[in-house]
Image (cartoon, rainbow, N blue to C red):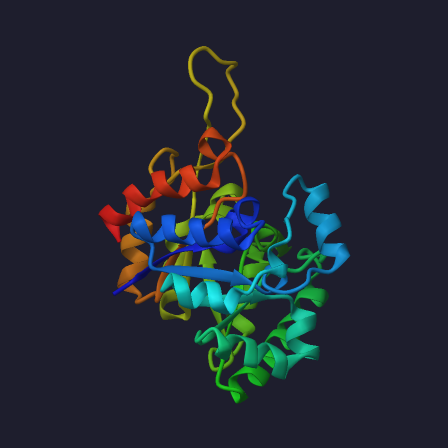
Length: 281
């Protein structure tokens, strides 16, 4: 059975206290979610640099790192599908990361993303690929699988006709590096998502889902700004994407939207999106 999960980052504003976190996790279960994806920087004390960066991006993190997440997860009955971590932590604190994943009974550690990295620089991307293969090998030796999570930056061209994402896919070792595919960002970048999913095939172990559209109603200017939106209320071909992900055997389909929630509520947002997931997953 494919797990239906929510990314912890979406829940950052409703996890300030243990009682609020417990209530939010219960509300997830009530509408049909049976999993959660954790972020390493949200389940332990957060570096000030992360707090500043997320605040500057308009997505403040709160203080969820102060909570007892092992206890909360056990109480909730939710399955932890993966833990997101940064590459530096994976390479420099490997055993700690492995033990953290095992403590939460998950087989996957996912690379959160590369901050201030130039994906148009082919040499830099090739150097990153070497680090990804090395990180994956280290985790594999400890019994944990390593996944790469994309955003839109990987769809910059490193040479005529080839994106950084294609370079990463072609040059990472499937023994050590596989993928958590996020369909929102390549859609935003103008890429062919269904073709990408076919290229990934069974290397796509987890699938991040979100929709893209506009909330504006009534009269509007000819051009509207698109943003994340609840599943089924945007214009992405999510039904075919979900079907393809399931056909390739993904372990979990994970909802993540960063903002633009209905009624400005991440809870209301995951409740509305649950209708789509319960119907098609």
